[in-house]
View 1: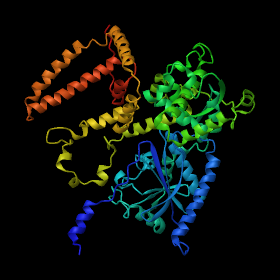
View 2: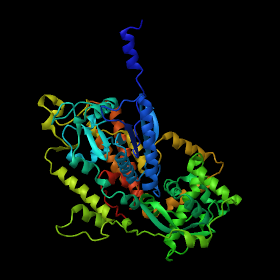
View 3: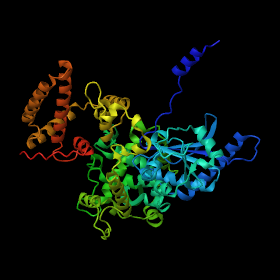
View 4: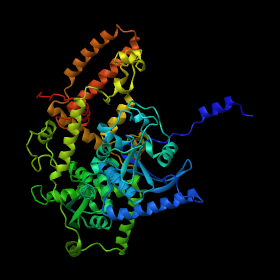
Length: 597
């Protein structure tokens, strides 16, 4: 027989695989069928639950046609699938929304509307921050709600926000954690434990106040000049615009290869049959397209109007979009994507004559000609400072002063919340604390009373430097994939193409060096001497510590090299934006301008 020690060893060794964490740009949602207690007697409860969830799924499909018929998602669309996990059947979905945070709130609005149509369903929605609806309502929450105990407590039911309270009423921090089965049992059998607060709900759903109109406001229509084939594809399915813009926005040397050819004969979207049409973008996608500096590739040389021409803006946006579609279809890493396969099948139908390309008359007579105002893109630094400082009382915001009215309202709300935090004497570095409410003096250890968390080497743990995390953040800032495997694969692909780029790289290096020499940027001798002096001083101070000399030298070298590389990177930017400057800006550090001639 198996002994208790064997069982304990097995349980401690073979633990269940934890559920992977959500990516930073994804939202996950679950729909559960929980009839009120006492529920009507049914022969097969599992079959009844599945049948009810299928009805919800059908309603969701109808609601999608009604509310989201023309909506364009930044990356992935809303979707629901029936799943069974730990014996619990539910509808589950996950959507990657990329840079478009509004897609997440479209989903929250959609789920809320779904609960109004089915009175026996309960919805749970989370992202990488956890219960983000609680974060929205942070200023109105009772003290017992903490991130450690928030899981499985926040639900949407019949359009309302419900929060499961602790078993025992308390104004202090609660340590009670809920599993999903426990939460479902409370929802079904103990409605007295459900907190329904109008104030909390208004704050949590504040971003939904302008829905459903906001759904259309998340999109932007612009008139641009693009190849006829590209116009055909976007007319067939407007959603193709998002992957095309993303392919342009995250391009790398491999993706750019088709555009480096001497002639446009090998292109799918040749710049020799151009049409001017209205194209619908996501707002984020349009901003990404417009904001990118992108030199006209050789394959488009001679096809663009003069920069002084009024049509240049439309032509430039169309050129960028066409290049994005070209990169999307040509890049080897995209070939298995469903959207790429769909687009290639449509283009094959065009080549075989099964699908005719639109004529100029058809475009003129039947296609949409909408062109939205771009005023929401006009945000200046001076206007931002004015909004952050706050307007004088009684002064009304002038139209167009800072983005659109939504941007002004959201920013003013953020500033107001920040001012409340600064005026809260009980607030700490992690937010507004309620220490006096739920902590006794006996709960605070001696280390915490000192106010610092210090390890045996005298290092502040909260301020310690994690090199791997730093490298990951730098890659994300510069738009690089965080996975080293994907980077290595792309580099190997670039090296294995059989092309000899040595001379091209050498020539590019010579040209860059010549330009930098002319500005004096490469004159680093004096700075290196200063760094050497600082290094000597640092080593002198380190000699008095208890650490071995070789460790001191190693730490000093790391610090010196880090500072040196950072300074060189800043100076090589030549006063314009770049990775080093952006990184320091995120840490609220501003470096003085280098005025040396």
